[in-house]
Image 1 (cartoon, helix red, strand yellow):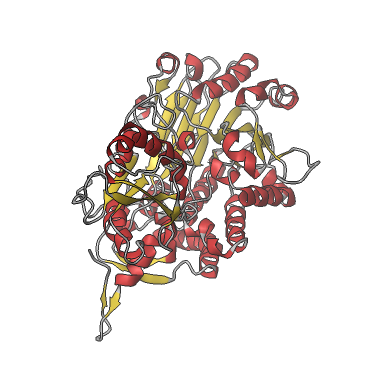
Image 2 (cartoon, rainbow, N blue to C red; image 1 turned 45 degrees about the horizontal axis):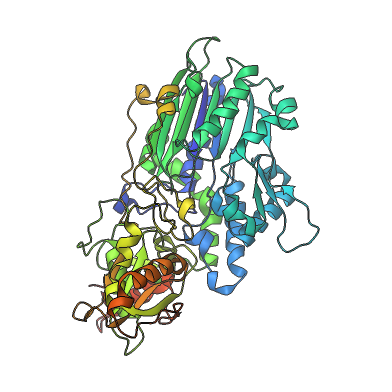
Length: 580
């Protein structure tokens, strides 16, 4: 423990119940993390040591506790509302929203109304550049969502000022009634110059759902620079989020000696971020430490020195309302069982691997439950973003369904096109090109491609940030930090049904894709038709593509329906799990 200590979570995406510890090695739930913080606070207080608890957004969208009951209209949103209330009622000192709280209209409205009706939560929910105006309400005014900053004193008497920001993705939030001002404008705001800069704290915290990447880091630098002009020696810490990475940088804006540090702490309650520092004289480098803790109960108990049974009891008390919410929405409902584990992003993708979750989905489950009767050969185009989590052998519950495919279920659509076109679409979408239909080949975040791509990670080649190399250093000097393996399939891929390859080039097939991928695929198809098919295939339509529903199963129900269909209870009472 140090004089001041920070515990950081980000991008939990409603994984409050934790992971299957036997399958992943993580397994800590949110109750374990809160118990960890509570224990450190109690043991550190007599020694004058402070523990600050921080969350930097994307609390929702990724598990049953925030995504369940979608088919029942607004009742689904009550799940999100309760999850947000439970999360923000935990003993965090400061929190900030993420894009998944701001891009959906009912979620944004529930968040705004919850904050307005809970002033104690609003006080610590920081979003200095975020505003809300109910859509479709003429005359409504923009109102601030949450609070710009918070200044408070710790139990030991240290004064802390925290500022919260959100990266600018207003093009994705505007339909939800959320307006996001440029981050760098906050340094000229009256509240910043007259309240933040005059607060004279012992430490400044910059928190927000904004990464430490080459694209976003200049925005953090701008705020750091404005503070540093007035407070040349006060420690400044950045707690970032959004890209699901484990990152750490020191010496913001190249300051030397370094009295600043920035950290991003993974995702999905797989990682708990830790930063500690001891007070040093002005002009000297801070005595710093940082860890990216693998989130499992054994690790947290070991770091606290607590007794297993005492720790578990305290954690269970925290988890009680989360378990009650899970029971209320039947998240433990048994759907069937799987014979094998199917990883998603924890091993390198191989299209021939039958035990990869994507291959199970498109090669096995889809053809078994989606195509209409008497349908012909098809090409299925999917991307790497509609799926988000693994599938584990054993019982498959309703919560597992939402973990695997949490996004709003999409209908499958089809259009008739020549085989020679259908087999080329994915390749064109993958080919680097300045064509706006395709990828630029640069690093792409999940927001740069939505709705075409709903993935989570930075893709492709991460652009080299020469200025970053000059102005900040890594945290390697503070010791090793275990990396997260983040592997994903190609951004687009096609699967072809039985009989597809036996067809002639000009034979028509069903080109099947998800509704949110249609608008991106359509111009590629039209381009390929003009370049080749129309010249070689007599009678090929040159008009606008006609799309029709394909089957009655939506994207989020494919695995669920397949598991349910192929789980068999034998006459002796034993169960045969779904198998390929």
